[in-house]
Image (cartoon, rainbow, N blue to C red):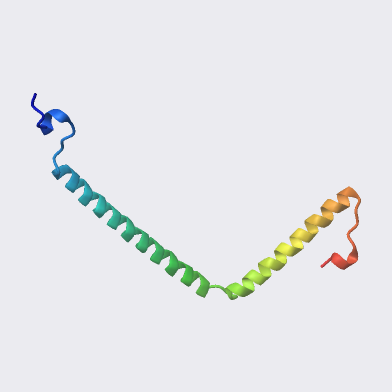
Length: 95
């Protein structure tokens, strides 16, 4: 019996060239993806800055205004719901 192993008869064999090419293509694709991500992020940041500059009121003031609208709408909804059930809200919790 001959116990020497021959790579062609014992199993897995492949050439390294396609693996090297695939690694290079994968790396190039990853670099293109990262470049696209950076370009897209930069464009979005620039557009957001221009939008903020064009606002009539600062973002913090706009948020205060929207928060006040949200509170008023929530309170109105709660009052309407309770009025439909016949429950009156105490006057101290309004506003």
